[in-house]
Image 1: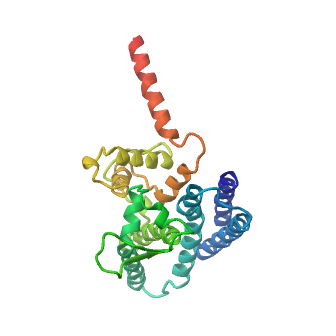
Image 2: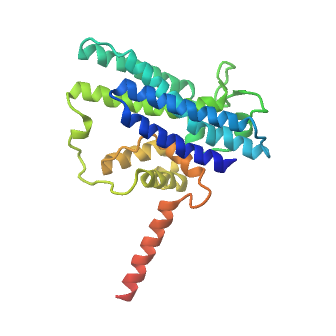
Image 3: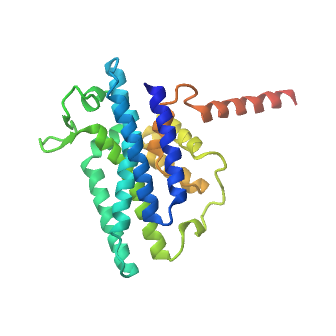
Length: 276
């Protein structure tokens, strides 16, 4: 099952890349990508209709790690189409106000879903059966709140929304900065002159390793904060690091490619130094 889903995920990424290349503008690009993702999702759903989960662990992995990789893309491009088609045709000030209003809505979403957001960022697994098992209740009361009003429903979908809204929030912030400064953010000088010359996935892998090890602030810093510092230091934008991390997790072999290569490179350097 996972081999098929992994191949389908690769197919989706390529379809998105090609769809974006053939479009004439932002709206057409987002719409073309959305249609491409919908076709892939139809294939995924058709395949899953023929499959049975072998055990609870496989079921949880599908709803927590695999399905959100696809659903988050659908939600992201659907939201992007909505944003672009409703963008005001008035002044720059009106457009900034429009984007700022949307950004506040996203911030409210993260506050309302703070428990699941932190649960995912911290890599917790202790409540997976309650949160990501279709056979269990789809309503889960957050232990962080005393009232009965705070509930998380359909956590797989909510997690997909979290991943999509992270990307939408980044898009909105970048758009606002560009409108306020009058220039593309890629042309703005950075404080640091250091550049990350490896892959973005490698930087994300490093950030998750640092957080998992507790190497920053006695382990109290979350992944997002660590990645933001690395991005500022090395002048790089990692984009949706949650999606990249999910892709790493579904690898069958060498899930820590960069860290393994990092270790090999350091040991080689030590061996060479011993020979001098």
